Length: 363
Image (tube, rainbow, N blue to C red; front, side):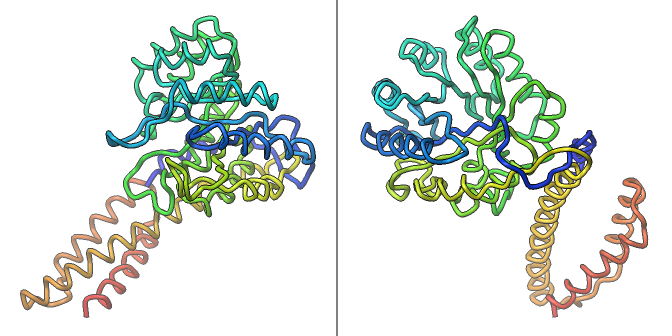
């Protein structure tokens, strides 16, 4: 449970009512990896057409030239060749292009090639040594640079990564919320921990904050809902993975949207005017929804273990109800309730419900 972060919501919110598009909302869209020039041309053609006819514009085509992969031998991007494709896209379509950098070599290649926007991934932002090297390579640079949150839910590490780049760069430095690697983040690939994103926005109001719903969800069917939640939490934009043929993608195929699905997502986003206290209520509800999901997952975990204990009891010819053990469980829970300032009767009733279901499962 991540209830310790709930203090993050205690800041002055703004009320939301349905409204037209916001004045500033950035959208970066494109494939996880740059796989071929024709692939990027398909995406760029869609973006160009979309921007001519729709209200919410896509500001840049994003595509990874270098891909940090967990296991050796996996597709790791086309590197310099991909940078050349992005140069062609920029020239032919007049689109800003963005890619990820993880080393000083990457930064130097991008600067020489005229790449418009850079971002730093979660694996890199977790390492202050690498962040300092990248910051040094960007000294005096005016390119926008975006920093994804570290894999671990460490707000200080995220802010520190942003601060290193901001200290060296003369351009816009922003943050990207892409979710966090925690045990059992289901149904997500990376747990959103919305309270962390809200606290990042509250504590660094000068730093624009995008949401990457693709990496949070890990499955394309979750992306639209996550994107809407980020809009409700007043984030400043989206970075979304799309592919002309998602099922054929060389990396992260399950989370990439088809081009028409991207159009449907963007046209379906609901923006609201902001003033008053309703935004705070929305923020709290988003975090409550996440905690409720965690509660159900934890109860499910507990019941699976209860069933296993039931099988062991039967094998050992033990009684289902073992009162000494149950009394110890209740006393431990009540001690925790007192320490957390919770009502003891409420906690006792809650655990009695859990125990009743446990006994049923072990019959």
